[in-house]
Length: 184
Image 1: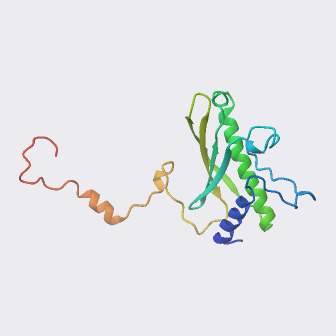
Image 2: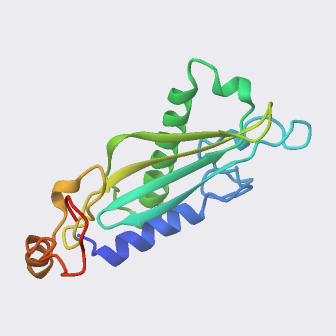
Image 3: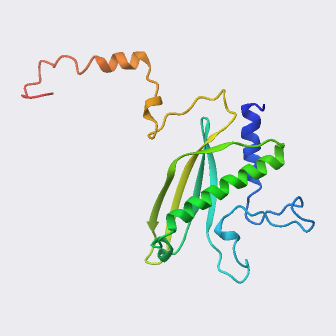
């Protein structure tokens, strides 16, 4: 069983192997390109127009957040399969991280999806848009890390007793110089 620091370092090492143009001799003798599942990997890099997309990971306690960014044309956003495409891209990023983690450490990585994919689409012109999406994954094997309370899970918030006592005091007495009627 690996400790928390080893798991975080191995995930970061797996993510470092996904830069644009990364090659590895493990997959073939000529150093085949890494396939993360991003749109920029499709087509010919010289003849086709480049697609702007990428991802980043962040740690939130015992969870991993995969942030995906892309700049698709507006007509793709209005397509019927747009949300499913973004969700499958984030899932393929997670499976790439699992595969690279296994190659780096020899152990398997457990990432369990939590909630739905949160997608934000903003238009920059009548043709281009910016898409930002993220999804949280529970990292298996992090038993000594506390869960971070979020908007999705407010029941896990821990409030200090002194703060609860202060809130229970209420507004207190009204000052003598306040002459307005009604609740102050």
